[in-house]
Image 1 (cartoon, rainbow, N blue to C red):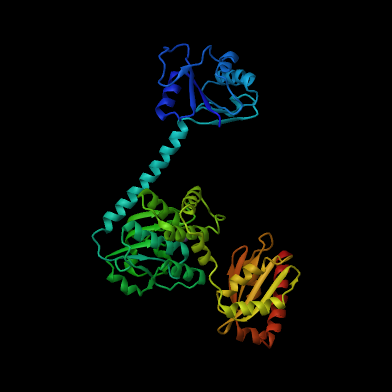
Image 2: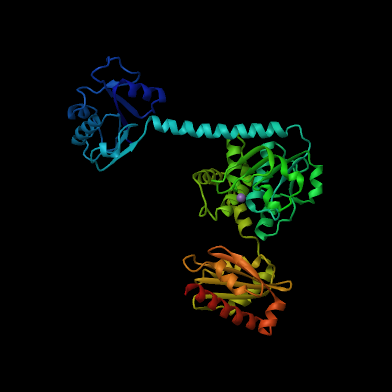
Length: 465
Ligand SMILES: [Mn+2]
């Protein structure tokens, strides 16, 4: 390891450096400006002979040394780089300046520019952001402190972002007992991954009737605003204590505290900022819930992701449990699901870029997992996994992303038969068996395979033309 040789232009820069505090391996030198006294800043020695080859030579630089030049003066920096290069030709140079532009700097193979005061300024701005979040936390706590039972209301069929935020809000409020701060919703958690999230974290979302809101002494809406509850929402949700959300801000309701940040990709990012601001260690379970909330709302930092989401994600990543996250994202497959998969794989073939697997009767959450896996087949651009769930044919569709949108293709396939939709690369469809039989006669595996294969081929072609 080499030394860091710091060269400051004038006493102001040197004093600023001394105030920040020099690191142990830093050699501090300064070049007094003409108009200033030669009073030596603490810890510094003058560069004997000013900015000259000789002066740098006297420092005895080795190839392993790093140089920093702190100056806002273009000619000074250019002279310093020129003379320094005579001694250590391609030595690494950090130019610390708050005034110079890249064009002001000379050509040098290994030169990097950074701010000096602006580096501190950026940290201070971050701290003010933390402070603003801390103020929110303090206000929310003060508002709800005296309430016996605070309902945390999520959207019907809560998604991971909402569930994670409800769980986090309990920590923020210091109410870890579910009885004093229940997570509530007008509709139960449906999706298998979301149930897996609740199960893995031991979170219970209580389904309630709107009239049961009267039992709550406080009400906070998380990841939702009242417009989601329909044309005529229950009056109680139109006058709440707090709303914490990232959807576009709606009007027509009262909230004492309103923290709505539509530029955020997930409400989990807001709650992560609350936790950090209030110095609450999330622990692996909560960190995992929040990281999953951000992942699923932003489609793994792909869609509508802000810098804030990235920063919270990075923070949570250091705290989460990878094993727990895997368990949530890949719920355990039941044995009969695996056997169904084995039978389907025996007949698998990729035709026209489509890998279609017919599973027979399975648990619903097996289907999307099989679709994920089926897309890994060589030459597959599309994967379709079909299973029979109750009286329906349920199928999950995946594609490689650079082909037609999966949601559009599925809507074309189910047209007149069932329901379906989705995103660019993931979609889901449901066709009642009765409707399928009316059109195709039988609903045995071979018939399902050939009928759906034809339907998908047509839908993909139609979309492409
Ligand atoms: Mn959300």
